[in-house]
Length: 166
Image (spheres, rainbow, N blue to C red):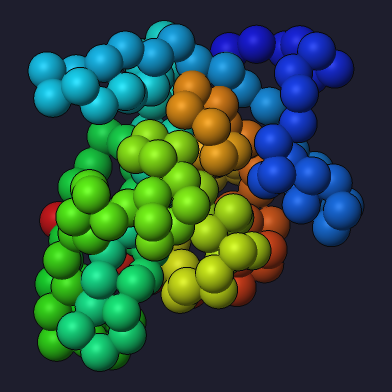
């Protein structure tokens, strides 16, 4: 992680947090392409703290349409729990080919803050997040994250805390 806060150009997410006077810290991670050609962030340098980085998974509910589940990168999102908590009968991952068109972000850069700001899709945060002092979520660019207090993330995204893990 980098502490070069003043040297990193601010993303829309960081500008939103600044506007709302929400404290955060920037972080940059190395990236690599997987076998499918998708760019992914390497959070392994965090070792035992890797669970503090959260991934933003864009899904579609049969009743609500697009919605977002936010879970640790080390865990799996339960579609059944997301459906139940969001008032849907079933949810499924949004197909990769529809992701950027729906959210405005490429795979690996989806951010609950930017998605809520631009689209007001419902955001669901895994309840385990509340036990942490701060968590990292994407700042809207592959390899870039912001570390923020869970309560601040919930406030800025109008999210619901609930059990989302398989």
